[in-house]
Image (tube, rainbow, N blue to C red; front, side, top):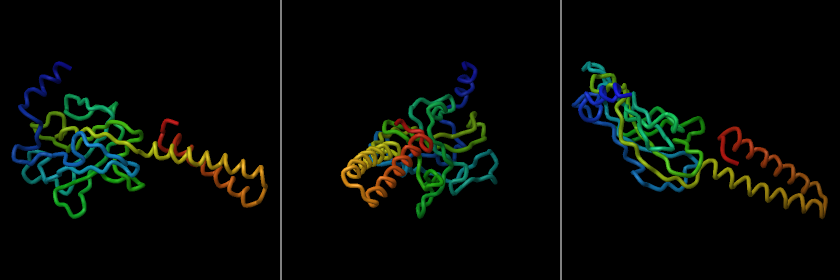
Length: 210
């Protein structure tokens, strides 16, 4: 570890692709922001200017190529400046924000969601890019980690929906016992299926706390 730290110290200042390349900078949400609803994912924005990933003048990345963003539950970083792996909950490649030149966001997942924190709490997000010059000894050039607090997440929203569906199911069963009709029986069937579906989302799809 001491050897790695000495190697890192040999490069003065922050790791850079090239001295004349603009850095990657986190823009939104800002450090310390409270985001109330991230059920659809945490939407982030950061600068992603064209840059030289290697020392060769003719090799230039642009339009988000070579950029990434990571989300973690802790703000500690390694000697490469990146948020540490064990705390990471999501990592995405970057895509350009529609209509905003030089600005990127996390590529959406299959459900068109942004970075996905499962549980409410404090998270850190960080943009970075590939870099293979002598100024980037660890292969990446990083932006500063940004701390955000999230309130409503995909797990908390599904837990709320499960509690409501469970209450409705209990009420439907009580109503059916007092007056048995096919409509009330069908309602029980629908609600039971809904409860089963929500439990599967929590346990299997999102790995949420129950």
